[in-house]
Image (cartoon, rainbow, N blue to C red; front, side, top):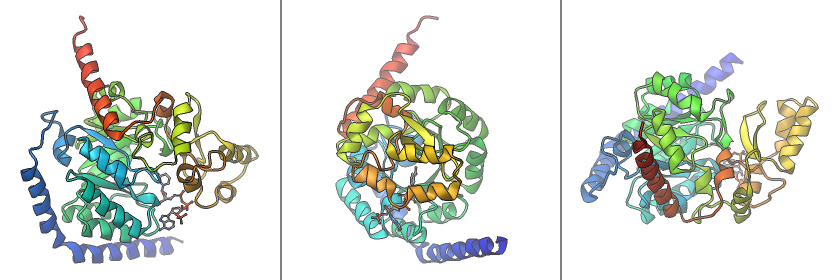
Length: 362
Ligand code: NDP
């Protein structure tokens, strides 16, 4: 078994090295492109000295999470045009679809944008090849080790950020050379940390552990929450749930409407025996819970899960039998808005709350 795993790792490394050799010359081209963007746009930072704004060349340290079935080029370009960083979620895209989304995004915005790649994706090498060929400026990786791909992406002039749920993993990311880390708390939707550490506890722990730029995620949907995590040591926020409920998100309208109706306690962490994931409590969720209560093992849960459950729910709109991944912040969202309105509201509330707190007489 160990030999088989080692052979798999060697194979991945070899394929990765081939891509690395093929694309080393892309680096110069990419750096020239980024320099052009910086020269042609007078970047208007609203937070002088903020490392997230200067790392990505964006106006506000607000990042839209790359989410399967919800964040294609329409959402990513709308968030980037609004001054944040929009991210295409590659996990639900076949390679051709990813290339098409990247090209459409480039046509719709001249601002920086990113792609999120879950490292357990079946055609990972093809995705990375496309990202390098298309000169995507920023990549967020998740669900895997950042060791292999970080140096390859960076040699091609791409900024790399990895998503973690603990300070131990954050330190590993820093050692692997990533440019920044997203620390995602238990409140978040979709795949989630096994330890169930909440954002309030995770951010200060990660801040103490690493010196590179830190982005907070999990339960953040407002300017007030953004200010709270800045107080804990974050320098930027990654927001998923609120951006699912935008006009530009590719989520099914049934899913958006469902999210607006949710209250606290309507999502729960499920499938810890397989991969922990935060879901809306529906018929599919109940079937998983009933099986777990009867002592089902991981294999039985995978059988109930079947294939393409997430697509069935989030993209095709089956609110009972689909897998509906969303965060606890869903309880705070009561409307479907344009993405620009979301970015503006979050930023304005962040500034207003900061001023209000500064004026407290102590
Ligand atoms: P399933 O195995 O149940 O289904 C695969 C789904 O992904 C299908 O709907 C399929 O579309 C689509 N797909 C896209 N590219 C490929 C490919 N190269 N091979 C096979 N299927 C592909 O997986 P899930 O839907 O649960 O998850 C899909 C991906 O998203 C995984 O990489 C997973 O790790 C990631 N993910 C990330 C999350 C996060 O929080 N970051 C949360 C959940 C999943 P079609 O039906 O059109 O064939």
